[in-house]
Length: 48
Image (cartoon, rainbow, N blue to C red; front, side, top):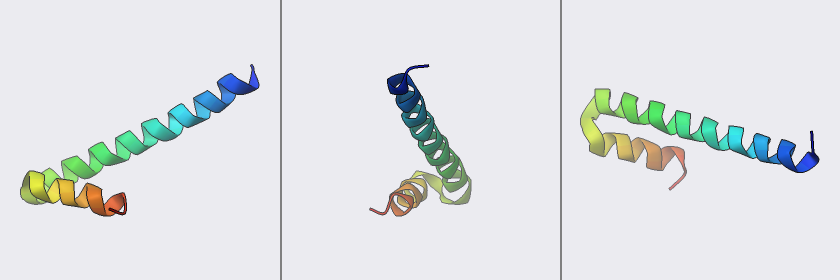
């Protein structure tokens, strides 16, 4: 495996993990208090 493709693979996994975490937070937020709360949870998680 080339070094470049390994680095890309690692970056892709990190991005994928972040997307999964955001989706989970969205779902939890929707169950707890609707879309506004879900967006607020994501903003807090990302440090906004």
